[in-house]
Amino acid sequence: MICTLNTGCGIATQQQQYRSHKVKKGETIYSIAQEYGTTESAIYRLNPDAKNGIGANTIIILPRSSNAISNTGSENVTFKEHRVKRKETLFSISQEYNVSQEAIKKYNKELYSRQLKKGEKIRIPISSTEGTTTVSETAVNTDTSTHTVEPKETIYGIARKYNTTIAELKKLNPGLDKNIAIGTVLNVPDISTTESAAIDNEKYDLYEVQPKEGFYRLKVKLGLSEEEIVSLNPYAKDGLKDGMILKIPKENSVGVTEKATPVNLENYIANKSAKNIALLLPFQLREADSDSTAANEDLLKSNSVLRISLDFYSGVLMATEFAKDKGISVNLQVFDTEQSATKVGNIVSGSNFKNIDAVIGPLLSKNVDKAAATLRSNNVPVFSPLSNKEIRMYPNLFQTLPTDDMLRARMMDFLVEKSAGKNVIIISDAKHNAEKQKIISQIPTAKSVSPREGGYLYQRDIAAKVDIDRENWVVLASSDPVLVSNVVGLLNGMPKNHKLRLLALDKNKAYDYHDVSNMHLAKLKFTFPSVNKNYDFNEKDPFLISYKNEYGVLPNRYAVRGFDIMYDILLRLASADDMYKASENDFVTEYIENKFQYTNKLLSGYQNNAVYIVEYNDKLHFIEAE
Image (cartoon, rainbow, N blue to C red):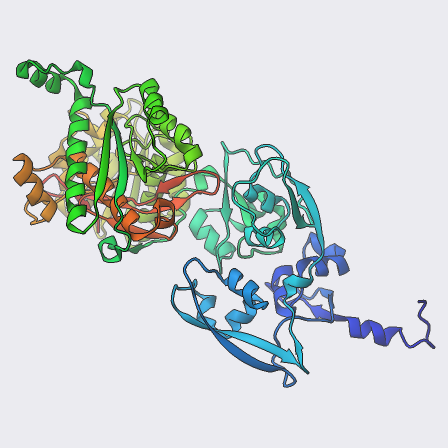
């Protein structure tokens, strides 16, 4: 129909269909769409130039119809009470009741600042105006296209390509799973970013924006400015939204989790069915001589791998006994890997592992890779117990040791958090210049000292930077044993009123150099990041007492680690249906010397993020730093 002044469908009709909005400072297309109960696609369709960004005071056109719950007097709002079930999300509840997530938050304001809790009761608004039930905004969005999944594509990369979220993709594709087959045709929003969905996994990770996170929060969390984030993710220039997938450099992806809630899993035991555990260790039994005790004693003295395996095994056995005391029975199968990847392959392919709840081991990273790859098809969790080397992260692999990058990142956080009011002095060699620059960028007031031409310092070089009225934190960035020995000796020879403390982003092998005195390190309260702390020999801990009664000696760090890993796995299995569900929520568990905080990385398996910041005490033990 052609509209004229006489037809009555001109300006008046357009005013009924559309409204205008003056953009306020800080508003984004996403926030405006949420406010007016419409979609980003609908706004972009009416305002094509908005794809290039919107500034304050810009006038944009919006659809007149709105599905958001308003506060007008013509609306009657009634409520239905809903008890949150396990694994329910705000999105799934909004779908169940055909109401927007924002509407639910509006009448349950605590959900603006936290996630849902199992068992809590929330109010669901049931809105009607003149007898007409509100239709959720998602039900009327038909602005979609299709995408055919190509090799190596992931659900996260596809969400990023189409400037959407995982939740929105699943809404458009009911039943969509994390693992998608090549050739699958997906419904996707009709607005695509100009970038390819392919991500260089060697250089970048994907990060999912959490609720209420803005550019400032990510600056603190990831160390990336708004300009840096937008340069990597151009579609983020209009602002961040919950669930947005960002590409970030790998060096910025470590240490991004918030401090997790400590949890004692002994208080959450619910699943007492027998736990089936497989232990793969290099006992090398073929080298043992069953007829000669002396030969076996010599073998133990000469074979450090065998000693480590036996110590670790003793801790595992003790953990099974503690679990039995809690009503958890354990079926433990032990295999000798003989330090061979071929043997590992034969074990996991030749034995029935389908009913195994968790595999601990092997010790070597290459053999862990073999076990995880072989057991991936059966989705059997594999725990790497003693190696933190970068290995391929399969979806079923649990890396129990934080990586070196995580250790350094956590120590950097400690420096930034605790250095206020301190006089920070950085001593670095040429190889660690980048590390020095990173510290200075985070602590601009830090002073720098470089070694002389021969790679050493005089005491006056350091004394010139010392402030006797403040505590002096000397951060040593070097892996040169000669320089480390030189600096440690010089610091110990300085007057006590200088109030010196030595710190490092990592405790490398240089600190084990024979000329580096542990007594000197203790006097300087040497502080560094670590995967574990030392237990107190005098502490009346049930594990320590039981171990000494059983074996006649106190446990070493390998025996303690065997206990901590095994007991944590058994308690996680007893608190949930399986290991994956037991590691969904962000919490930390802690035992004798080790703690565990597993997070599932988007494109790989599970990584333990729990790091200690420790210091040497006068007993030459490292305890948690203050």
